[in-house]
Amino acid sequence: MSSGRIEVALTPSVMPLTPPILLPDLAATLSAGADLAKELKAGEVIALVGDLGAGKTSLTQGIVGALGGGDVTSPTFSLVQEYRTGSLEVYHFDFYRVESEHELIDLGWDDYLDRDALVIAEWPGRFPDLFPKTTRWLRLSHHESGRLLEEIPPETH
Figure 1 (cartoon, rainbow, N blue to C red):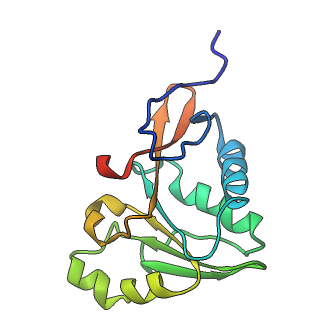
Figure 2 (cartoon, helix red, strand yellow; figure 1 turned 90 degrees about the vertical axis):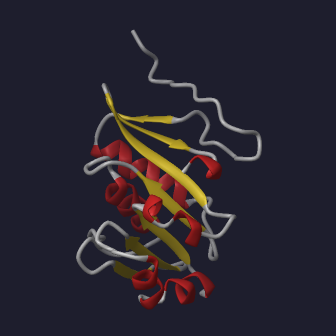
Figure 3 (cartoon, rainbow, N blue to C red; figure 1 turned 60 degrees about the vertical axis):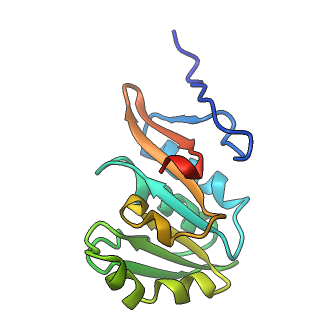
């Protein structure tokens, strides 16, 4: 029987989630987001990589909820959602429907990055070159026992 621990080799320059986390259900995904929120601060950028239904928005719900924010909805159609939490502002992007770098820049991407806020982006692989070098890249993937959350080295996106 598996202990639920899955080991993933990461480069030493990346502070990994220890260990990568197996998320068997929605409650575990929300809880992982809440745990992650404890270490996040203004000025950070989180890139959430994963297929449709992998849990990117659910993880964001856990983060925003733990920070004291309200209801989180997917920004698929609005492209960005803004949340005022008790401790910091959060800007939640979804690049799935963004057609070009020019469109993303027109949305004010650079301006959001310059704010003293937490920025979370889904589908970052569409425009990886527009992310700061300090971006924290997290991958959510489907796994036989639910989903797996792991930190990935920036150079592998």
